[in-house]
Structures are given as C-alpha cells and as structure tokens.
Length: 255
Image (cartoon, rainbow, N blue to C red):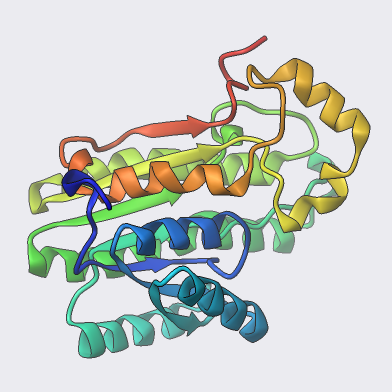
C-alpha cells in the first residue's frame, strides 16, 4: 500500500535514460507508486528489458525510443504524448553523458556534445513538458544533477560545468513555472554502483576510499534513488520547489 500523500495513481511520467541504472530504478519507483511511465532511451534492447522489469513488478510502462538531443524528434514525441495520453504529469531528466579528460584535452565539438546532452536537452524537454503540464494546472519536473554540480575535481570540467548549469536551471524553472502549479527540483546522486561504472565499482582501492570518504562508508545501491524521486513527484512535496537534494551517503557532509 502506498500512503495517500505519496500516491501517483493516474499520473503519466516520462523518465529519460530509463533503460538501466538510476533511470530504471526511478521508473520502477514511480510505477510502484501508481504512475504509468514512458521510458526513454536510444537502445531498443535496453528499453525492452526495462519494460519487462516494470511488468515483473506489476507496473505499466511503454518505451519512447529517441535521442533527446534531437530537437525535432523530441517535438514529435510530445505531440504523440499529447495525442495518446492527453497529459504529462511528471518529467525526470535523467540522461547524462560524461567524458573525463583534462581541460586542455577537449576539442570544442566534444564540449558542445556534452553540454547539449547534459544541459540543453533537459532545457528543451522541460519546456515541452511544461506546455502540457500548464494545461492541467500542475506538474513535476525532476532533474538528476550530480554532487559534481556543487563541487569540482580536475579532469572532469565539462560534466561538472553542465551539472552546475542544471542545478541553476532547476532554480530558474522553479521560479518561472511555480505560478502554473509546476514544481521543479533536483536530485544530486553521489557514488552509485550502476552498470555504466561497473569497472570502477570493482576497484578495491576506490571501495576503500569510499569507506573513509562517505558517512555511510559504501557505494550507493541504485534502488536507493527511487524514494526521493517518488517524494518529489508526489502530493507530499507539493510545497517543495527549487531544491537540490543530495543522495550521496553523506559524501558532501563528510570530511
């Protein structure tokens, strides 16, 4: 049973990059609370796997295969969402690209590609989603940022810049869309043991470092991101907007 204040019954959600990792766990959390979820991604097989995972827990979902940096494809997708579902209540901007290189090693094409995926695409998706949300008088936009949005390290300049921008965009959209009943919040994950960084997770030196560096002394389990997303999406968070909540095992609080 889902507590009334956290119920998402009747809501339609879109999770970008929902085929695996944190995106899939967020999608599972939303359907467990009652939402119907559109799972976006570029890989057909990963999307099918995600849909089957949703069905296995009794949820309802559909795939939305497209590249979120393709503005024409995004526009067409939202036309289809309007025609097929008549609404969009929740948008989770989860897609993120990373390229760890030194500041002087980046060619400008690579810089633009990262900024496009990590910042410009969420801007465009949020605008398209907001048009539908305004028609219904309410909505929830959740940006998956990173603890890298508020701290920095050498060799990660563009991702850090984009995530800092996404945090700023979260606050700006909260200010701009609040009058329409739309809340905009961000989740800043710390170190999570996902498929995409399995090689790093297997590194004992990094595990030992995290044990000392985080308050909880371990990697995060991807399932541990879902509850925060459900909270931000739910009526329980109806007076919460413009906030960035770190889900990092105490990394930012611990030194």
